[in-house]
Image 1 (cartoon, rainbow, N blue to C red):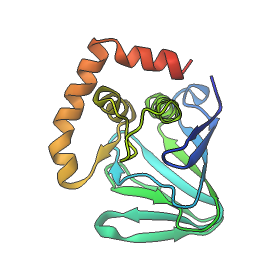
Image 2: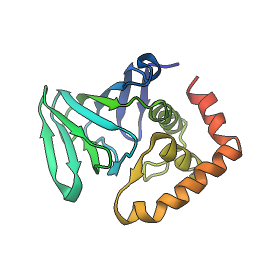
Image 3: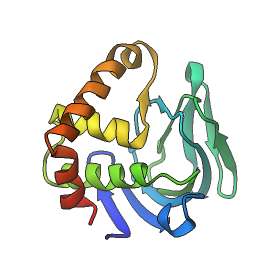
Length: 181
């Protein structure tokens, strides 16, 4: 299984420093390098906390109600369960940060591998999400990534149905076999 993956759509390189399996589920730790303009959409998780620590460059984070914070190297921010957040790089050079997920999440790790693989295979839309709606649903549920606001409220039931159907059709297992082993 690859320890380093790249998502060209989100402009990020992810190194799996420590996996959930290696810590018996205690935590997962990632090192993420984010190119200028890179970042992810606003979301939250119910299953785990995330500790973000800037390593090189300034890490931008957006929280609830549009509040933005900027972490300098060595500074950290703990995202609690249920807390809206996203990270981004508004610098003109790459940044690097760590992300410690507690408890560890094999589902998140697998989702990151799947999404990077799909993006590299040209299976992302212009909106930087998987083109296949089953892939989108499976990734969202597997990683416990939930969109915020009205979009999240309207799409969460649909996403769960798509993930369920994707599992029943064998799509989830096919994605795991292709990108995670």
